[in-house]
Image (cartoon, rainbow, N blue to C red; front, side, top):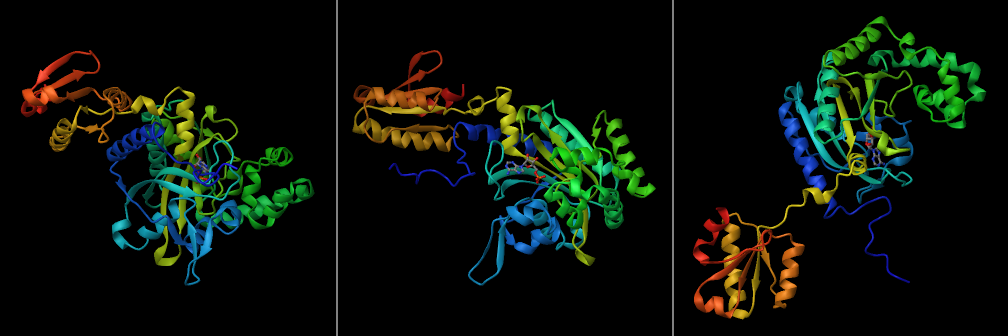
Length: 416
Ligand code: AMP
């Protein structure tokens, strides 16, 4: 049987040329958009103590219940591969005191969830996200959404849909849950098995259950804002108004709650129609994480990079569009030419000219094929007669034009 050793683990992907060119392009665009908003990059470890996630994401969430890659290290400590970015960033920020007060950070990196792999759902996937530390303020929430949409637009995704909702301020969660439970109690037997469990553990999640029977029951409930204080409803109205002031038109979806416990006030989700069943491109929300002097409030978002790639591919954008070819490929016929080209190659690189060459003495034809594969703009050719005459041939691969050049003026010639 053929060996499968060259394959990565199920649900994980090797990202290489040509796709990797698109990844690099998107990452570079993201960095320049984050610069516009005064954000600084943060790179937290991929591996954390398990409680970093269980204490913030919440024990009764899908992520903590069934999706975390958790194991014991040699000392018996429980460790987890990060399933999302916020918990680690907040762990860091809650330890730096005053410095974190108005922190604005972004991250781009891999996340791990032990989910059933399917189209658009992977076990290692990448998120690009931000965290904006700050007390609850509708304008900050609106700025966060505006940044996210500007980033998606800069990537070429102008046709995204934004849905927003509120979960009420942090202190109200218990009261909201109680009222919601009381409303749902007469229908308990008609809810799916998961929702009957959620009724007691995490009743808000009944609202976004995908089961049609549960959906029909939830449809008849009053909007969630009816269960919260005027202050919380007003906060949400101000978020929507601030977005409208910026010319954005989010759809209010009273069923949107998002899967993580740390959210309060504003939550949102961004979808794209090209994605099919897994149409969530990105999410975000306001949160309070930690207790006492470690408590931190902020607002943030995370965008699924693989889904961005899928949406762009549906628009015909491909990695090849961003492939950057070499400046020069050096072709050598004979040992003396190869040695001279090897030295020249290092000189060219030191001068900022990208180049490469064959070191195995292959035929002229094979070397020219390699130059084409590397998408070289120019080819330098040297054989015995060029060596004797102290010149080299420079071929422009676009026009096919070939000129004689001197090695010591080659860099200047390439720059002209
Ligand atoms: P979440 O942290 O669950 O709110 O996810 C934020 C975004 O990450 C989603 O909108 C997806 O685009 C992406 N995402 C989440 N889980 C996965 C996964 N298993 N595979 C690929 N992308 C994912």
